[in-house]
Image (cartoon, rainbow, N blue to C red; front, side, top):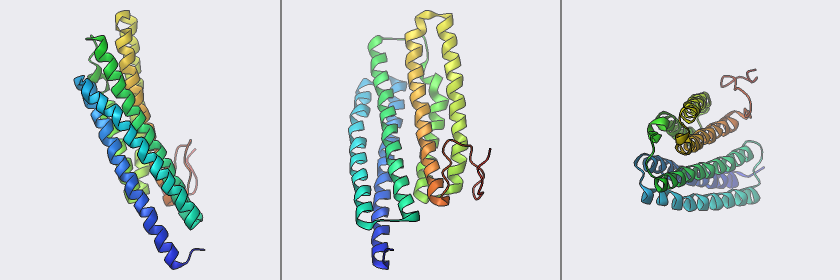
Length: 235
């Protein structure tokens, strides 16, 4: 068992890590927003900046993983404390992957501009899903900051909205390609972007699941969660 002094030091160190995770989250949110802006405007210079920003996100991951590893070695946390650290490590990984997806959107924008104009209104096709994923990411980070299990549970349900929007986009794009094969290249570009956005929603949902894991000690991955406070997952 850690003594009171060691326990306070552990709390301070974990709080410092969480604060830096939220800084990383802010960078990722901006990267995603900028990726969608360059996708809307076709600004290749901005797309290049989004791609370059991915190295900043990667550096956050390296530094935070190292900080978590050192915290475990020095403080040897157990039970709830260890659960908090391990969940934080997983949040860091999901944020890094969100950064990767934002960079994919920027790279697709760059490639689209190189190919020239298209008959498909790319941004309008993904406007709704991008808005939903943006809100989901922001609220997931807020739930992580406040360790709010109730908010996290609601966000998991919201991910279904993002998934539904992606399926609708996919059906629409398949129709475009069937009716006019000349749209195939442009439609696929839009589909890759929509898929990247859908994956961002998945990673945001993962963050919400980790919050529930820390707050309640329940691992609800790969299952439909029961109401917060319930001991038994829903079927």
